Length: 343
Ligand code: MN
Image 1 (cartoon, rainbow, N blue to C red):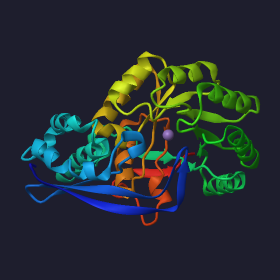
Image 2 (tube, protein in one colour; image 1 turned 90 degrees about the vertical axis):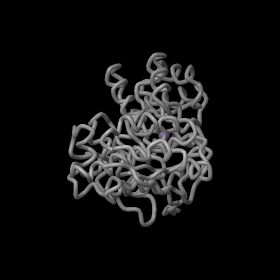
Image 3 (cartoon, rainbow, N blue to C red; image 1 turned 180 degrees about the horizontal axis):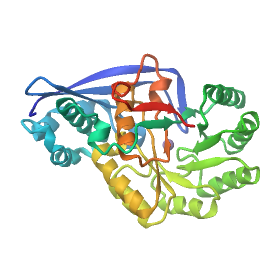
């Protein structure tokens, strides 16, 4: 079960409609498919979906990480995956999404060798994962229409993007609540508000009885004091996403009592830091959600296996493959892990 080869290939995926969040609109995503070959020909797969906005990653730099990563793991046995994870952790700062994909490809190769799904190698806490779906920033009418459609499709949790227009955001959310009353919402500002704006926003929505399960990343990533301020003055649970890229961020956010929720994304943390954050959060009684960048089927499958393995997530936001043309989930149906709308 020794590693013989590592290959990267880039693929561009187009969104059905441009994905608009605070200060960012994307119409496509260029991802890296990772293929890890063992000496007996077995292939392990993984996918990296780079984020310049969150991780500071550029595609060229990531592609160039292939040779140095291969140097660290070539000839090694995938059964010793934690040993290999530690070596790949050296790329946490410069290439976190590639770190995730290579770490996962090691588990995928091992999974095929021993005929055990990855979610069971890592613990097998659950056999299914429920996901919400996201509605990005749009007009009031578009948002209401999309929420109705998702509700009709069976989604009971919808994630709404806000953060570019405080008053307009409030109007949009109240209109959605009125049109689709029996849904719970995760609201993600993607760093769009100041701490004071964030409190104004949550005050008004709370008085109106808006059902918000998580108030995600209201302020800029580096403003831990601002996050704590919002947490202490908002009636809704506050979550960190852009603020938590590594296990060290998670430790600081927990110690400084900044948040109620941490949003783990494998593209930020890799598998290794994600495992560490799960244990840390459970120990500290901090809740977890899992999210994604712009992965296609392979990348989302990685997170589905991780979520089912650990059973640690109150909410899963694993919908990127649903938003892109031609992307289908990979390898989890036949292995008994199901992805279903949140019920
Ligand atoms: Mn987010």
